[in-house]
Image (cartoon, rainbow, N blue to C red; front, side):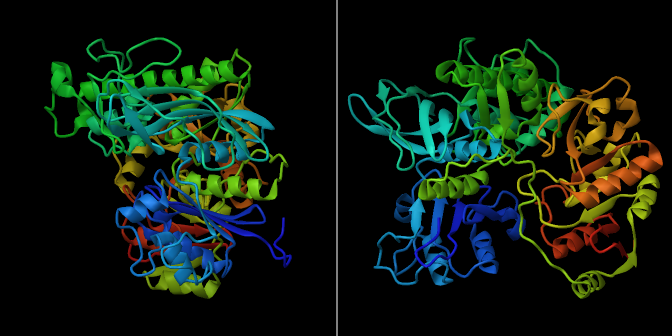
Length: 605
């Protein structure tokens, strides 16, 4: 579809909350997608202001701004999120002020170019996963912390707020999403609660659907509670995922969920929800759980065993939800999204648990709230254009902005950080890796989402026994945090069990080693014998593939140690300046720029 003047249609989607971000489409094609933290350098940052300004590097006008969040723009304005005098919400106001949308609009009136999709948070998760899955039709399972804020009425009177925690949708092109099931959770105990008919504001025919209202923690909130119990911020669930293999089954750990039926609820005596922000373990009710005898909580067996129980039981709850989705809809193409979708241990578990049930599963790699920016933009485009073309499955996350640095730019950046530049090729990098040297790599467009896939990566030789401890120390990460590996796709089945998958290009699964492999690459094998892997082809990433191939030709090992190019607590680097700043603040001394055939070395290291 084109505008009346036959100009392209520019659509920007933004996700407002934590893990904020922006996506820009041109005639339905993704121009870029990026999280705010990559630009602001503040982990999990909200408010995508810098990401909105990035749009100006591609176009000075957009046709539509699509806003995704759990609360509406009007609710945000009511709580003070408005521009003085004009009365715009802050996002409409910013886009108006920089000229991206029309600059004249009646005071305090909704802007015609701004579409508020804040009441359909889970549907945007579902939309992104569906449009990137390659399926012609599917059922979406969304497992999230706290989605749309939903007003509930109470008998005989009064009201409260509920929060989406798990949802099921049928998905059809071009933009038909029908709600099948929704679990709504509330913070406080309720008696006689009921929910009025829940209707979407866009792109679906809801009809009647199954609703469960509970005063318990949803699946993701249980994981958040245990994450906080282990001494982390609730949002740092990846750390709990890394800790769980250090635990074991323990009868002193209470059951996290209370029933064994098709769909269970969490144990409210153990897990106390604090919607919308986090939850906590009620350790005071259980003597075994209340031990805090170590300053490092992760060294305590009760924390390790709780992490183990949490991983095992939450992933089983999602298996039940997937089975429910298939049973209720008759569909066997399943797309999984929402924050829990990033749990690569659980994703691998589903492949085994569901292997005999004829289910085709797609796990969305941008399952965090940042992905709703892309989901909102894609869903709006499909509704606007009525385009029912089925997308091929997404196998790349190189969706960040393009940076076209010149050699003069590189020289200026590096010299300002006390570095020297030399010519280098892949063989030179392999030689450094074999000498137990950490080499960072920067090339091309940044990866969208939390995984480093060779464009913003730190590389190491996976064959060193103490490699995990060494690199964790350099990155200032916890001792139990595992690392990933990038492997030539043609060798993956010799080294790993993909449980029926052909490949793993976006690092969404922690997979088992084949027999005899763990001792060959000890740096990247976790204590449970798994490794989060990325398969690489020359078509997907030529420079990275050729580097790994050079490493393989020299060593006989077709896999390279890969971790995100950042230090503990920092976002992934985005720009060359960010990369040089990370080198300056760490013990990392080398930066490889394969597109330019250059190696940067900090001179005083």
